[in-house]
Image (cartoon, rainbow, N blue to C red; front, side):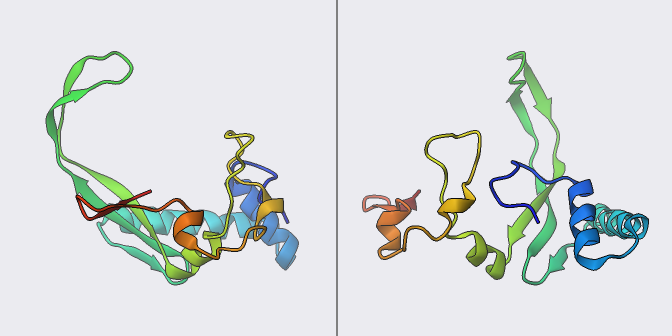
Length: 143
């Protein structure tokens, strides 16, 4: 099994290999099941249905309003963008709780997390530890 700090991303092939090593099932069948799962998720999203995976999260389609004056960041050219669908993901409670204590590596911003730091610092005062700041004038909390 891969540690959190091993790679910055995990590919579909990595997932297939992980399932293969844990289950011992046929690698081709695992790849087919993963491909079918992804196709079902895509199909549901294209049909504007939400996909709820309890303990993990929810994928949904939201409509982003179009704008007359958008800017192409590469060229700086002003362009018009029509309304369009986007996929959003809302993590479930269990996933949020599982990743809450991950600590970013301050030394290297390219590597998002260090697995050896997980759980190293207790969250005695969570507001101070994660840097919550209350803005009393606007009654908003910023991170």
